[in-house]
Amino acid sequence: MTFRISTIKNYLMLVLIFTTPLSLVGKEKPKNKVLKLGVIGLVHDHVNWILNRQKEDVKIVGIVETNENAILNYKKKYSLPDSIFFKSYKELYKNTSLDAVSAFNPTKEHLNVVRYFAPKGIPIMVEKPMATSIDDAQEMADLVKKYKVPLLINYETSWYESTYEAKKLFDSGRFGSITKMVFNTGHPGPQEIGCTPEFLEWLTDPVLNGAGALTDFGCYGANIATWMLKGQTPTSVSCIAKQTKPDRYPNVDDDTTIILEYPNKQVVIQASWNWSHNRKDMQIYGSNGYVDCQNANTMIILENEVKGPKKHIPNKISRHLKDPFRLLYEVVFENKTIEPFSLYSVENNLIVSKILSLAKVASKSQTSKKW
Image (tube, rainbow, N blue to C red; front, top):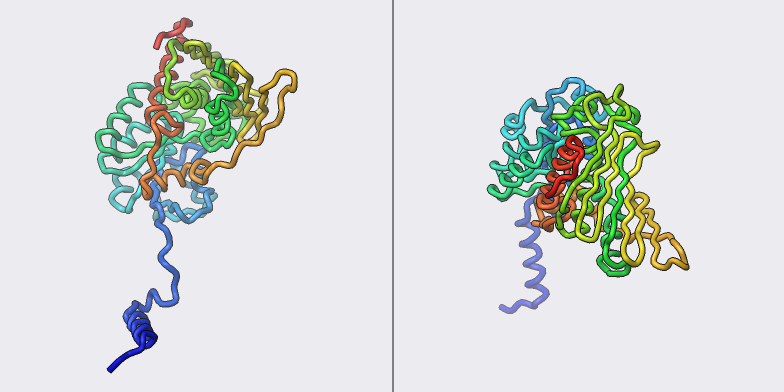
């Protein structure tokens, strides 16, 4: 007996249909993976970033918190069920299936997060800065290297289109070599802008935060400068840390200037809780002009003194650069690597931690500290 080719094809189609599970008939292919995320802490107001995130590629499977006020506030604000709350890292790990954790607890406790989750092979992201001291940062770096676990440090300015455009412009050579960078970061003050009491409690604690504005906002300029300079370290660090509002912030600085000296260039970081308004801007000066990043996507450049400054529109950046949780997703599921000395990297943030540690010492001694 002979069969036509079309008959054979029809037969095979019937076999495929009747041997396919009913659960798949008429349905699309399985969707992409979902990152099962553990949230460590609710006492950092940046936690709203993940709680407000309306995307299905990341799902919060558990939250570790013991502060009852924070728990009640966020339960009410986001209609969170009791079932996702845990009192300890151990409870979270034993009762959920984790792909990664993201820390929104006091900076001093970042080390404990790494101590617990790195040996278990769980990727970690912490809020800036990496640690309150270079010693803690180095231990974190040693742990993630030993257990081969990704560790990301998240800065808001790492999402800015202007940040990446500035580096691209200087890497192109259009503005010559960098001679000076000035970073202006901060706001009128954490009390003044309405930070939660739970956040204020540790943010204004010299142990839990490491300092005041010095660590809270000094880290931004140190992070971007280290990236722009491809991991180059300063030769010396100077710092003036002041208390302009000792009645509000009696235990920490609230207005700090850090100066980093490099061969043939200087970085000035003005970190303050005493600005008239919120600001995260930077000016980068080269031998042939300057780039002024006024916010996340507004830029002014000058290449010709006669023509004067002009507006510059930064290029759009990829999804993972604008969304740290998407970046974490790609690190976990797509083997995306964090380049050494890039903004989220451990290598960069070890330098940041040393800069901040030396700045604290320099502010007390009122002398610059050699690297």
